[in-house]
Amino acid sequence: MRINGFALALLLAASGCASYSTTEKAKSQIAFGSAVARKGLWREAAFRFEQAIGKEPGNARAHNNLAVALEATGEFARALEEYKKALALDPKDNYIRRNYARFAEFYTSFTRTTGKAASGS
Amino acid sequence: MAPRLARGRLAAAAFAALMLSAPFASGGVSQVRLKLPLKPRLPLRGNEKLLLAPFIIAADAEKARDKRLANVDLQAEFHRFLKKQVDKKTKLEVLEPPADLKLPTQNLTDLSRAAEFWRSVGTTTGAEIIVSGSLEFRVEDRSGYKTEEYISPINGQTYYRQVYVEQTGFLFDIVFLVFDGRSGEKILQDEFKDFRQTGGRRADELQGLFENLFSLENQILNLFVAREREADRYLFTD
Image 1 (cartoon, helix red, strand yellow):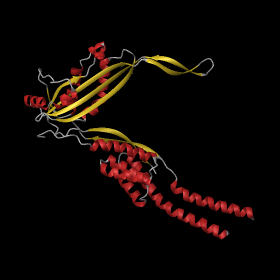
Image 2 (cartoon, one colour):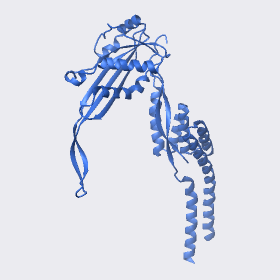
Image 3 (cartoon, one colour):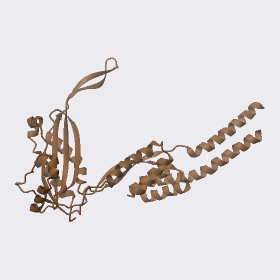
Image 4 (tube, chains in turn brown, yellow):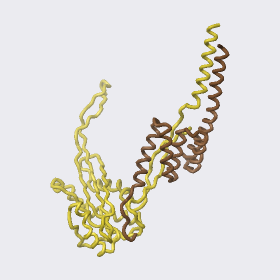
């Protein structure tokens, strides 16, 4: 009984460590990416967030941050995709929902058609 | 022996829970400000000849009686403001309208459909783009009683009291109609509104008008040229 309990604890700890290491790598990329983003280095930030997604594709936070970085660099169509992925992964996160709503408002007005061009122009 | 076993199990379970929960610990969020581009609403080359035609001044009987509005030449002030902004912030060539240019109607819908009229204006002046529409400026007395919290210096208790507050509201509403000077067809219709409130019953109406206009400046210029706007987003920090 005691051996079984110890084995279970060891198993849980091992599985925890395995996922911890992957997540930690993603987290460190997100932390570095967000630090450089706050300094305005959005391309470097986007690269870091892509690395985080590569390590942990199901990380909604990384997708959200990548979407913000893409928005900052003017890649709006890709930003929309990333916001959608982030929201699909974590539909209840209020920060992601707010970001997506604000982006959707901007993107709608940005892509809105503006009537006919003046003739000859 | 039994208590020791229970303690051991508890410790193992706590350790396992700690290891599992660590990767999911929630982290920080920071707010960042982005500068986002706004494409011009009109698909222009950028150096067209633009004619600023008169606007319909929306007025009703009540406003006609308002002496404060009698001091404001809305048509002239708006024309001057728009010309100055377009000259300064775009490469469009602004043409002055002929002195005898009169709108064929005071109805906005009819004005937007008067293609023949706008084509003739375009031919006469050489304008490629013609801007017209309607303007409405309203000064409202917003004075009234408001509930205010009051802490008594005698007994330190909180009371609510009614206080008379004098305020003036300025409402500005512009409908832009933009026409192709060659065909006379309408190429864009857009409306912008702004409301400002200021303390005092006798706030200056011209100052109120320009408060409205400056707050709409970015949106108005965005009809003709690309602009930028600031937007806040949330960034996860771990």
